[in-house]
Length: 160
Image (cartoon, rainbow, N blue to C red; front, side, top):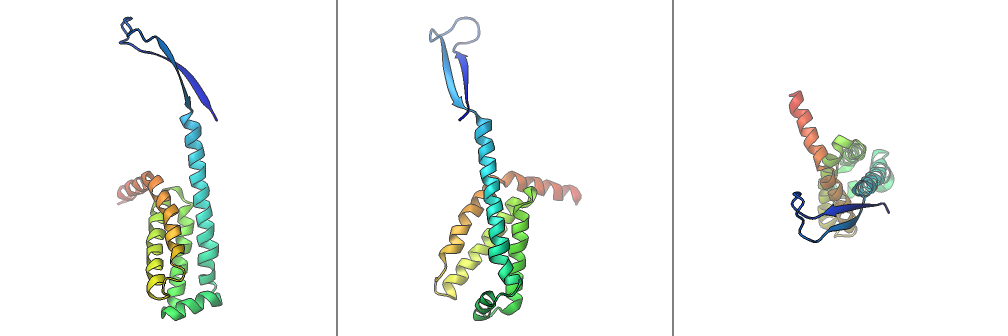
């Protein structure tokens, strides 16, 4: 843990202090804490991107029998399966692009809301917890990267 020590003098700065004298303040370095938080957030983004690309999108895009069976049972067929697979893969890639990460997290979160509703209505809630669990880290990423969404908005307005 990084610590800094600073001497703080109380008073008005005119040489007439309040009589409390100097005191020592020890605090953790904000830059080290911020760096660790950014690295942890980036690691979470990479982990989710890998999950969405390989565990979720890939089986749909290669028409794995398990994915095809689920989409046929829902009545969406291969068109729905490929569409969801493309959306998940696009979201996974966008999670890795800093200016798009917030928008990607919100979009994947919306996709997970749809997955939750589908799990509850079509499959009786069999795997309904999975999309809810995935929404939590996506919401954290969307909130933490909200300034990137503002930057994206500025870039789009500048181009228009």
